[in-house]
Image (cartoon, helix red, strand yellow):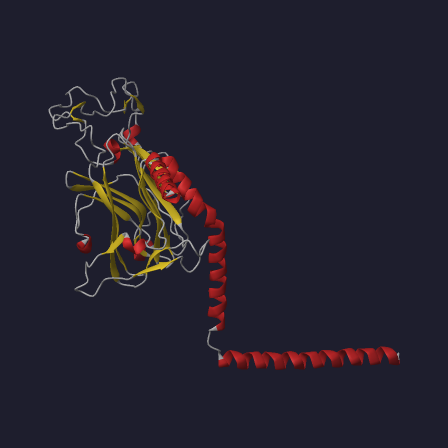
Length: 414
């Protein structure tokens, strides 16, 4: 009986700790994770569903810290987990996870989604509506950014700011924080990379102010910053200055025959005194008013939404992506309302093991290079060249030794 009460007390204390931390969902992918995640049958009929590996990867800081990794090239991946329905009204929403692209990803996503309402997890796929899509996306040289897509009134809106993502083959932590004042932060490895407001950085609502469509530029509005100086007068005889003059240094060739060659005429050259058509010098326009802009007015179509940041029925977290080259590993997924808890989780997992992971990666790269060198085919011509070089060197050494001997003998004879 005592042990029963002890068990209840421990369970109660754990539930209180979770509630106080505001953790809605946390997945570190330990044993039993398959019971919490549902693999979708999306694309199964086309035999295009990729398998997930439960692994710590080829290099890691802790072999016991495992996640789920895409394992097949040219495959679709869709997997999701359910948590108690949650509304972030009057609360901060934190969405965080770690991702590692072991395959040196050149085109593909590493993002995750939060979904609302009820969905059929076995049919979860690319067409399934979502509330938030967040995470890195890499494709060629042009796309290397963090996606932050928010659904508002059944329309997906991409963040207007550019947020570069990490592109190496190591683990990185991505964090999205959405606050009740409609501000947000995007963090990578616990460092803030972007921040702002839902009002400015997404086109969720019409603009609060617009240019007055009825406004017109006044007729007397002067946009000329500089004008000709009315006091500047054209010098007398300016227009009489020719563009070209006869070359004073030109001389009639000695063999020139006027009867056969015609009358000789000296060539012309540009006149150094000619300065082009006359223009009065410019002075600052005293009536200059700047470039005209229509005044801003309140947008009659704007209607504020105090719940702009609210997702009232968040219920699932999922990964849905297409990968040409597999090898992306997800881990330490978190949905909570406490940014400090998220920061501590990143420190406890990613930060704790990042140095060891980097060392393991460097060692793997070193071994890879050594194996590539070892597996290189032997070039027979190169071997022949090496043999010839060795023979030439040997002959040169013999000649050198003979030279040394003869010199020594000559010195001894003397």
